[in-house]
Length: 269
Length: 313
Image (cartoon, rainbow over all chains, first blue to last red; front, side, top):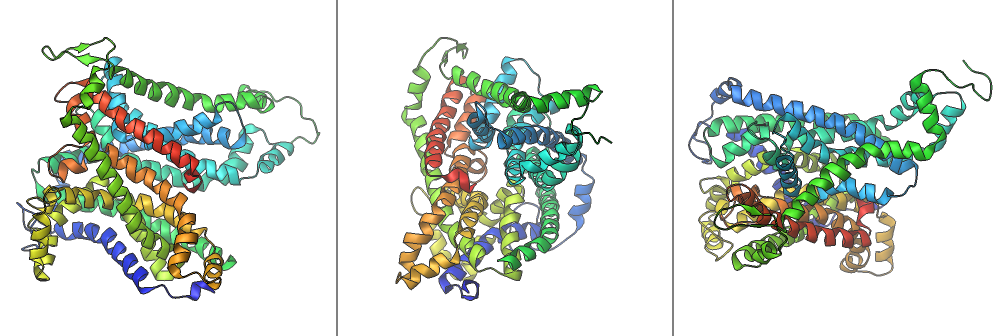
């Protein structure tokens, strides 16, 4: 059995080194959130304190930025879910003129560097004299969120047998019933995964946002301003830790949730 | 409700519309792709084209007003040494980052795909997913902490009595600098870190599809580990590597935030675009700059498609 074979030492070392490289910087964030040092990034920290947690909780600008980020991510994800699923349904279920073009079109916003999407939207807004608002941010975000929903949905549609849909219809379900009772349960988890990814992408996006945001600050824009002109390093440290925590919890949850399935997969091999 | 084989037409506007669509599959397809075509085909592609058109305009050097007449002069400006350096620097950085990412990603992906079991599998999963899903800016910030002159890396080198090595690296021309956080080397490391998961995932997916029996067969037939890597494993992983390289290459080409926060202060394409459209107000030149990555990625994607990289995504 190949699985019983031991890995060569060099491979083990390289893989372990890679893991340390990937995880250590994130772990460091947790230490810096409690440092008493305010003016520099000194290591080791001269002392530890929890004072800055309270200070950060009381900062209105942080809460405002967080609120805007959540709002934008929620709206963009909803748009992406609808458009991505529709496109995936068409591309996976039928062959039509321009099908290849559509699948390329959907990939384009993430294949092209974000700055291009950003600057072209910005110059379009200024040509059409559209003022910057939450909606201009949403427009930019939805454009690149569609692709992740689409990718997940199209893969699932391909694996879902078309005969299922035909059977539902033959048995008298109407189009909406078929969608609700047959299609949706089949693609549900794919949409959930795609939607989560789209939400995370939007929540974290900074490059396109700098071009489409005007004076509003999403959380990433707030972070960026702190990075370029640090005003309060300790608060930034705490915000950074909070953002990491928010991402760790869903990843761990997703891992525990899918763990069962993985074991069954392994047993089949 | 209905027991007849052929159902009577249903009443209700929605139901009738749905039924009608089902009887006309072409119409169904059309309606399904209409919104995306309007959104991406008109709003997005329209904006891209509007931007590209501006690259054929020029800016009046004295008044700063955009002259709306066709000219290739703006593109000629790209060839000026100052601008051309920016382009070369960015492409070189993107190529090096892609190469280094592939080299670092491969052992991680291979171990995770073939050997990791139980607890280790979980650790690899988290090790790849956590940096992937963590906020981009938080990751950049973490590296600012790591690379700072008073930071942990300097401290580690000191504790290992290797300060001379770090100083030696920093005193190298071009890639060195005052500290790692203001050097090309720092920019390079951070780029690799940020895009590495995008390389690991497709490579791991490609490697997971390689049957273990195939490698055993190679060694049974007398291949040395080196030979079976070169002639069996690597060719099978290649579509995954190319798929990953689309991300690492494209993302490095367009990024303007990492070199701004960790770097020597010399511009990359993204920063040049940002500066030209913002403070300089020279939209035509900014647009001409953006054409460079578009053309490069167009060629790259076309090549990747030829090599079957899209199946590995």
